[in-house]
Length: 67
Image 1 (cartoon, rainbow, N blue to C red):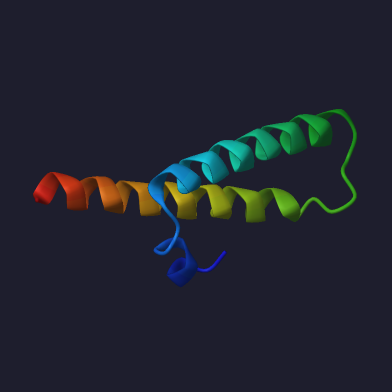
Image 2 (image 1 turned 135 degrees about the vertical axis):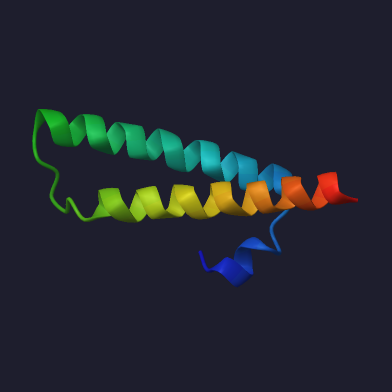
């Protein structure tokens, strides 16, 4: 999801997506530790997605505190 798309998503939806993405990342890392997954480059992509979601949530939190 692009940065411009994230600004249009509601905060609750963004929190849900973050939770789902973190769960998926945890499962992927656990699976990869046991036996290699087919495409290990999905792990860094998932980490970046989680970081994007967290950054957008933090930005919104700071904007709310400033008001």
